[in-house]
Image (cartoon, rainbow, N blue to C red; front, side, top):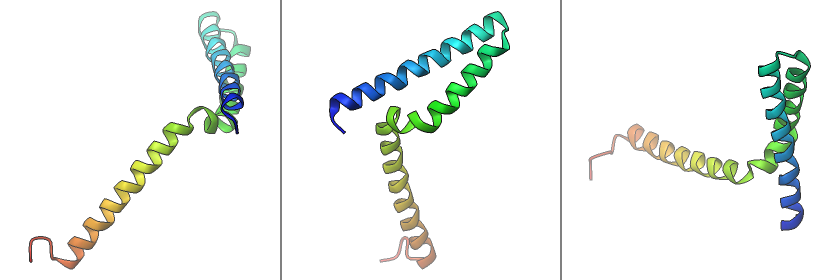
Amino acid sequence: MTKKSSNREKTKWLFLLFIAILCFVLAFSTQQLIFNFIAIALAVYIYKYGNPILFKEYDERRKNKYEEAMQVRKAAQTAISSKRIFKK
């Protein structure tokens, strides 16, 4: 995907997210149920299809941190199970 089309996709999803937030605020202030349904439907749609586009960098960083933590955990478990933590 090119940078221009990536930015266009991100802009589209951000606009839909803004509309969902606007519907939520309208529903909260006017107490109209239809705005709640629209906001919920948009939120589910954005979560399902827009999340990989909007939060790609964040998800990659979180995945890398998780993998590093699992490596440290595995090394700690190995050290504890071998009982050679402080022995040389």
